[in-house]
Length: 346
Image (cartoon, rainbow, N blue to C red; front, side, top):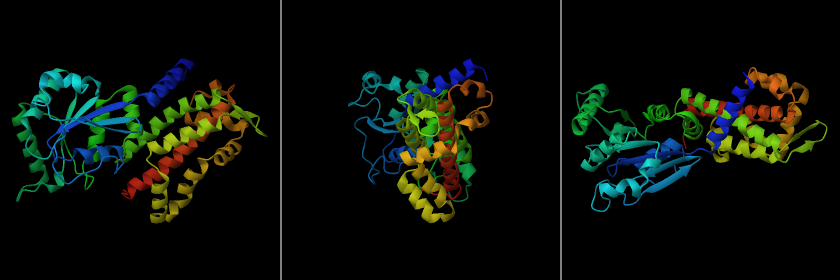
């Protein structure tokens, strides 16, 4: 890997750390948009989920870890006419649109989709609450084919449809893959880091995106407010490392409450859960610094990023930071993988 390649990775990681992703949801009342926002972020209490079918009368924005998800009100209504809708709700701001339905589409949803198509915007249709669908003598495949056919008839063309259930978790992995596949560059990295993982494949993407972020975080830590660590001959910004660890934990959705709960369910993983918490302290970082002695830095960093060993040879603190953060990412990934395998949900 050439120095120019490394610099490109570092710059992309910096952009990823600061670049948000904007997702808009629209569709009929009661289709489960709030539940989908909670599912996409992995935060079950981010949006209050009601039992009624109240209309959305304003743009409702919700943010989690760089993801901005907005529930849009009806398009082309007396309250929000079509000619003013785009400017009022900043439609050009959004990276992707989800049309959420649990039944027949409303005419305003069809009109809005056509406007989005005309503007070159990407829209995914989400047939939510699919677990409640049942037709005697009809297989799931037949049911879904019929739903797709009905949607195509209503809209006038075949469209991308993802079938989901926030209650059972069905189709959430397909939805995250569909969203991720519609994004590019740092937007995709941001989504991979922040969205909840419902498949091992997506969790691998999350780990990769976190490793690229670690390049940026390690550089910041090495360059700012460096403090010599007695006995090690290196200097680090412990506060910057702790801040990066907090963001990485957020990316894997490993709150202390979730880790504690999972440790009781899967006691074999309690040591790793406790380690994730204990290392994210000043004492924990100093302990990791002692573990990764300066003389081993270049060789160890090369295991994570082959070819850049010579670049970090003169920047020991940067190398140490990379080791610490990737060690922490590995711990987070291991326990997140086990949570996924055991279908652990809040």
